[in-house]
Amino acid sequence: MKAQPINWWAIFWIVLAALYFFLPMYGTLDFSLRMERNTISLKAYEIVFADPRFWQGFRYSTLMALITIIVSIILFVPTVYWMYLKVPQARPIMEIITILPFVIPTIVYVFGLIRTFSRPPFQLTLHALTTDMLIVAGYVVISMPFMFRAIDVGMRALDVRTLTEAAQSLGSNWFQVLVYVIVPNLRVAILSGALISFATVMGELILASFLVRPALAPYMALLGLTKAYEPAALAIISYALTWVSLGLLQLVSRGGTTRQLTGR
Amino acid sequence: MGRFSSIRVLLCFAVPPRCKGTNVAMSTSPPPRYRNNAWREHPLWNWVGLVPFFLFIFLFLIIPSLNLFTGAFVTNKGLFTLENLSVFRNPLVLKAYMTSLQVSLLTAVIGGLFGFFVAAAVALGHPPRWMRSLIMTFSGLAANFGGVPLAFAFIATLGRTGFVTALLKEVCFAGPDGTQICPFNPYDHGFSLYSLTGLVLAYTYFQFPLMVLTITPALEGMRKEWREAAANLGASTWQYWRDIALPVLTPSILGASILLFGNAFGAYATAQALTGGSIPLVTIFVGQQIRGDVLGNPHEGYAMAIGMVVVMAITIVAYSMLQRQASRWMKV
Image (cartoon, rainbow over all chains, first blue to last red):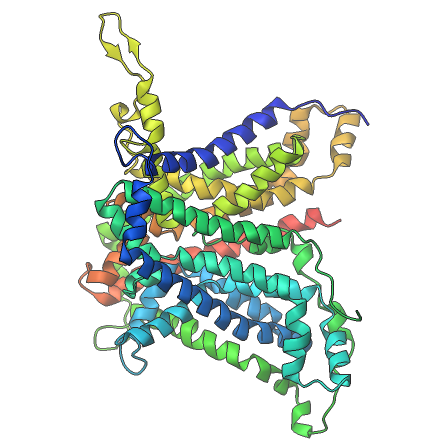
């Protein structure tokens, strides 16, 4: 084989893309460090970290993200498992349902949620706790395409029927099959779904803002209206959060074909 | 968040062979039976396991959507009417739709072209391996990056006091009459980040990586043999692209561009944070309608929102049809 000559045209486009990626990152980082005149300082970060509303938003969003992930797993893992095992003919309808959150823009979806759940018979927006339940349901819906498909792809790599029959022949009930056999085999899929759900919820503005809950993104948007340097610092923090979770996702899913955990 | 941009979803869309036809093996053997209750043998019993999921979806997705839909077609007293559709004759609403369509179209074309060239460079240009993985990793990240932080990043970069703006301002020459001429200060030439141009620039940040993610599998699916066969028959590179590569890629490119279009059409947070709602996008308008009924008739608001769903539905259907068309060529 002859060594490939360097294709400068390709290098040009790649460098251009890299510039588009990194310039705004660098610009934000640079800006966030220049709160004090003529010197590089972490002042903007100190102010953000000293703001109790930041921590309130951070705690709230993290908690909601975790609850969303748990609810999604409890709801979707058994559903996908059952679909593979018993009703493969349900797949087309499931695919349409899981793509619906793409078809309905979030702003329209929140409009529907407010119209439905801010009046009897399902009034949920009166109390903070019930609003939080509503918001978790909303998060589960908008992260469904990611979570559901992650689990779906993971389940595809398994021989669900054989695993189930083997477990059942050893005396497992449905619950045991799911928890001790299926879930451990899906750990990579569940983890990648969880990471992308986490990133989605942490950055989500619309639901929290229109249902008036103290999440991170509405706090950020509010800060952006009045301040200059703190938002840049917040953007860097938010970048870090998103990129750590999505970076982990790429790392996790790069594991290639997930091998089945059986017979060993 | 760029809502279309899950890496997995894209893989699933873009490489249908990975996603389809996998449950063939499952449906061939009859389900094992462990219990003898006759009512459990009924095929409908199998659906029982999906009930919790369907209940959840019904309650939190179907009912809210139907509620908007019915709201769009009734009067205040609850009688059926088509009156509310007159909202689409309201100049404000029309302007919002036109602006949204314009922004979505522009970013789909710009992001699509840019993304296509980058993807082609990565897939066909034999770049060093680290460049390739850098671009693919960052595409996965940037396509998911949007919302408020993206707006802040662009303000810090291209805003009036932004980093790149400052760099460009520095480039000054002494004019013939001794005055300083700074030809590249963008704000002297009518550029503003808080305008449509700025919005398009910011959207491109998540649009072109999405294009890279969607189109790369198609580019990698192009066989080396096609190129060799064309070369053997005396075709130039240009002829190869015009007569073979582009026709094969057309459904993929169109499909990906439509996906980009939908991605921009539904976006709200970036525009809201960047322009404070001064650019009249439909999403912004719907937001204002939710907060304060700016149309003065909630039912017209529902009709306007449902219009968005119609646009998105057309987008998604067109995308999946084109994707199916594209996958025909890519089957190995």
